[in-house]
Length: 325
View 1: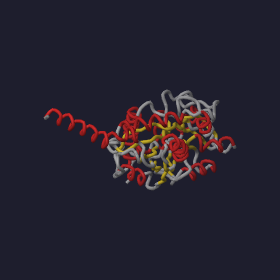
View 2: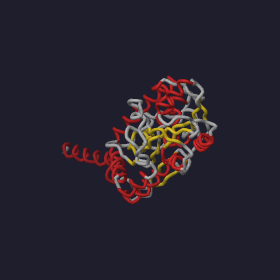
View 3: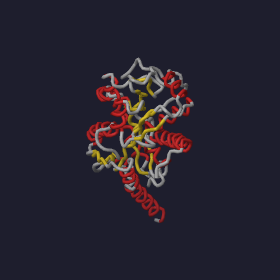
View 4: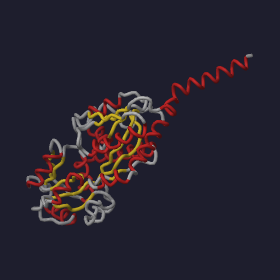
């Protein structure tokens, strides 16, 4: 009798455990999901996520809502996602700054390694080193030589301290041994306008936003920051090819979830995104913008990538003295 009661109790315990902790494996998702984008609509992060959300809605059988929560260098939306329940119904769309901001902001309100876990990479976007056509350089080597002959005089624009363009320029400058003048802006739009206008001499910018200005002859491209050439500019060398061995700085976007989200949910989402980014029509549509859709092999792989980026960019920020109060 006691044995029978024990068996029944064990069975009920197993059912309860499955209902509380594992129902997400078989019954997930049971309601709509939301993906928080901590940026304004229209950028690569937003555009990629909206395309993924549309297809995820079809694949998962539940609506996937994209919610833009911009503000304070992505802190507003990121902090909101960090406080969400770890149940797989709230995800955060992130870019490089997700792993970088805690190294340059005194009180970011989140820890990318403790408060979140990776779901998957979603895309890679190389940057391109562009100069005002009036600058007398046509190669990376010529730029390095000019900057070395005029230390601290060659100006470069960024979307703001600690942004992707700023970090790429710091990485480049330290690797080649030059010092240039930083001119920060409150956003990328005005920065690129002033490089075109000649108020600033150069900048590192995403290929997708510089492409129309390059094709119009308003900017001169010198090289791309990826280790392979961009399909948008197949004749343009990489910075590595142009004489800076090992240089690479690629903007990456991805999805993360609040820490504690069950692994089976992370795996399910990872696998669904992987299916979507392999769709030829979607891939080609984004390649035309210089954006390569790509998923991580596993949630753990993406978590490890975020950790490596956090450590790499954190060291660069400390070495360069980049800090925002």
